[in-house]
Image (cartoon, rainbow, N blue to C red; front, side):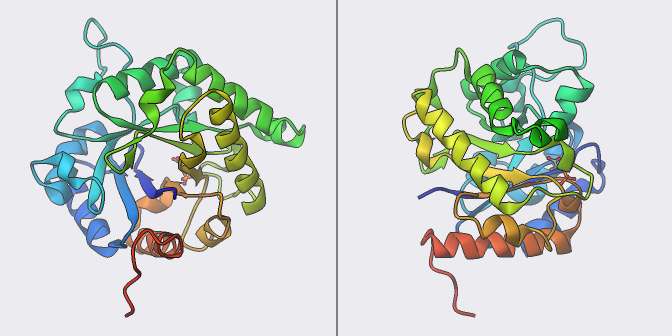
Length: 276
Ligand code: PEP
């Protein structure tokens, strides 16, 4: 049975003054048995979010509580990298990290090989990763979306010991977010059936790469997800949740999205759905 995950990518929004309260409101309005919730604020807001939702023992927030995630991490352990944050520095602040987001591929020139190094650095420091992959519109229109995403996976996981990225202690070390680049922040979404086919292709690729348990790897959809569009994706048994950007700053939207994810978790028998 695959985990159901809803992750909030707040991008470059919120401040240390308001992030904790927003996280607290979202956390209290999204309690759904069986849904792993991850809030990824800017680095400078990690402590405020942790204090608001996770308490001092951030690891305890995994599982049924709300987990805290970072939006990026550096691939080296330490050194002369002005402005960067190493994975070990996130200890006590975050248990998850987003790597390979298309905005970092676009704005910071991150390529698959570097993203792979970040993945390995994160795993080495005990952080669970959400690895983002996705094609450009021209790739989809040319019928090469699966080939592009497959190549991204190969490039990011080359050199990784895939045995390290399975599930341990009831939680996965890796989730993949399929985020078609043309759907991020545009209000345009993929079709649920296309996203589901991609999720299946992602798992097939990971199994072919030799990942034990690759068929159980959670694959999330991301790209302009709202409470109104989430159903199209979670109605697909192959999709295990969402990486939410713009809508994740709105408690009403998050409440709707996580409520729908709760139905998926209950249908999978992750937890009994309360009768009320
Ligand atoms: C994202 O940031 O990963 C994302 C999918 O953004 P949005 O939901 O705003 O498209």
